[in-house]
Image (cartoon, rainbow, N blue to C red):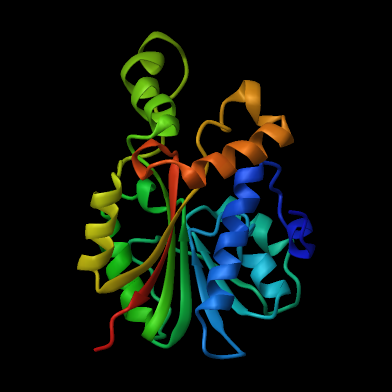
Length: 234
């Protein structure tokens, strides 16, 4: 699974590389142009934005954290690509309405109003532009431990802070939200099953098998979803 653009990330987990490969392959397989411009909304330190720039896409990365953006800028490929901005995903403004694709990866669960972000994404995309969303399954193994158990039990009896996730999505919830924002869902893939557990995450062999297993499991049992969507024609 080692690919050239992997070296431009800070990733170490197999499932993170799986997600990155899904995003890049989705753009390649569903685009009708050679030169593409995209937005990575909630880009963090640029672990998706920079590999896409390496592959020749014109990229903008937006994140609410100045620290993340400064880190991302220090890893830029050229002077003007990617272009990074400190902005709020629920209130961002680009002054564009013709982007070819937008990536919103592991972001919507952090937002109080994810529908606002999706509506803004719709506005900056050209007709038939791509939206790639990845989210945790709010009732899968990861969220049951890292969100529900952490918030209801662990944070109350220890110094561990509650989860930063403010929304939990079932598959039907996230599909409805995306469709209401004006998108058709083209494809849904799975992330992993239990490879996030600390006792297992260091075993590359297990994580590989776990991610393979997740692809075969019913959607309700996996830890997250990868989704390709297309903006509906106006």
